[in-house]
Length: 222
Image (cartoon, rainbow, N blue to C red):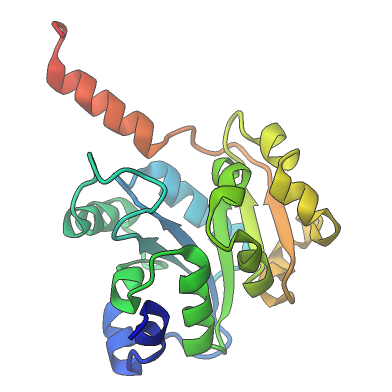
């Protein structure tokens, strides 16, 4: 059985359990924020709350990846540890921290989105990502499919906006970019459709936090 087949065969009861005990009703607008969350930090929370506000989302689901295929396994905390950290950081009734990819058996974002849209076709999903990942997305497997599966919201990150908007993905899908003032309509739009949300968001990154932790644990003599 392939990973995709396993994901499509998951029961609704199991899916509800993975999502915290219940499935959202039809018509709910849900933002999906994926990543290693190694560790989760206030920047993830800030992006989520900004998405809820500006995209008119009912919820944001954090998809904590078992292992990001573009990142080394070395230095990656265990999934359980990262889920616990993410729940502490999220601490909001409209943010669901999930291990959906682990439950679905999917490894790549496009694969995860194909299964989710198949299993929950009446939910209005939006893929959310920071400007740094938008700039790097051409390195992702089947990245073009992501834009054809869901509308996409890109949230500003300090120092990344210019590079992201001049990058391969922005140029490839330039004709489908929507004005920022239409962001609240994005969840109901037919893909491809994307919006870039400018704003004063957190400069935090998991990489920077890990580096600071290592430096502190080493002390002044290293």
